[in-house]
Image 1 (cartoon, helix red, strand yellow):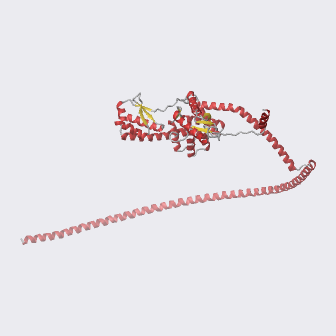
Image 2 (image 1 turned 90 degrees about the horizontal axis):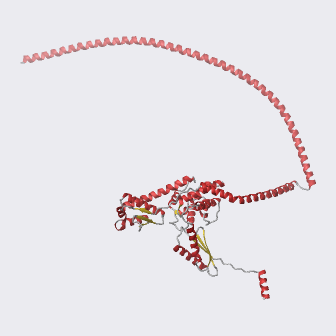
Image 3 (image 1 turned 180 degrees about the horizontal axis):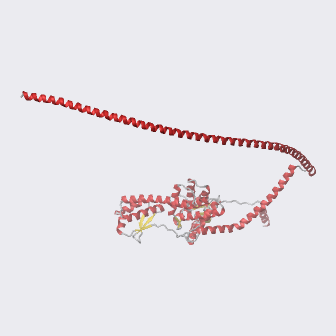
Length: 532
């Protein structure tokens, strides 16, 4: 056993020694190969370096030769340029010398001419002095012989000229005035005819519907609700009275004096009938939607009208008020269409007369603006229109046109006359309004009848198309307190008996005059007494 172990150890030692020798031999071979490879690389590098150095030297020589040649060419060009410039400088110097010589000759010539001019100037001054002396001597001779100074003569000429001009001016003004008075009616008629033909548009009268047709019984019952709760709720929210026609149970009338509330109520009822969802929530939603849509429609209508008339910027709130006129009628005539018509007529007349067309159209459009709110605010539409125009800063010409188009105040601008004429043309043309002549005359007669039936009344007159009644009382029968009481009584009776548009003004006049005569009348009276 020990022998075997010893043999194994010896074999292992021998293997290690042999392995080291083999590895050493292998390393020596690799070192020799590396040295041989390194020698080859060195040799190759030396060869490549020599080739590159030769190439670099040859390239450097060529570049140097090329650069030398380019420098020589550039120097040659510079030399040629210098030669050319020297020649040009010489030419310019020769030209300057010639110019200097010509200038010297010209200077000498001008000096000689200046001397001659000075001599002539001195001669002219002497002649002027002589002429002034002769003129003064002549004027003095004229003053001595005429016994009048120059200032007095000038003043006399001016006075005579002023008299002649004044006479000619008076004659011309008289002629122009006479011609204007003769031709004014003819020209006015021509202008009015032209405005009528070009302005108004023949349109059917617009009657605003006050009722809604409900054909379905079930929808009608839903609309009425249990114990009329739905229809009363609609009345509360819209501020209207809803009444079914006794002759036609499916026809629902919307009763109110406010056209906007009527429009909202009609829209709400129509939408509820279409949707058939009728309860408190849907009613509230439809009322809010209808009111919002109506406000937007008012704004759009005002913008459309103002844009079509080309009258410039207008306040947004005033645009809404203009849009309200769409739902207002006067004797069957739509007030918005009437206002547009008056604006067109006023603008045409203003253009023919050379006035401001934009202001004329603006005044025509706004002349009845008070009718948009006269159902909600106390006062005549003229008074309300003036307040609206002043509130939104309208031109004074527009304000005066609104205030004077029914004769309430004096006219202060020519445009106010045009607006009044346009209002009369638009409202008075055949077919514009639905009130007949008989109704109009009966209304005026009724006003005068009520006033004349009172004790102490001497005369009564219905004026301004029935918008005012003027009463003249007997001052011997009624005093001031009774006069005021009479006006109140007439007002109350008109309100109770008559149907009238807008507002009627009652004016009671008590005028007391004391008359006495002195002189001839008194003497005649004494003579009659003596004869008696």
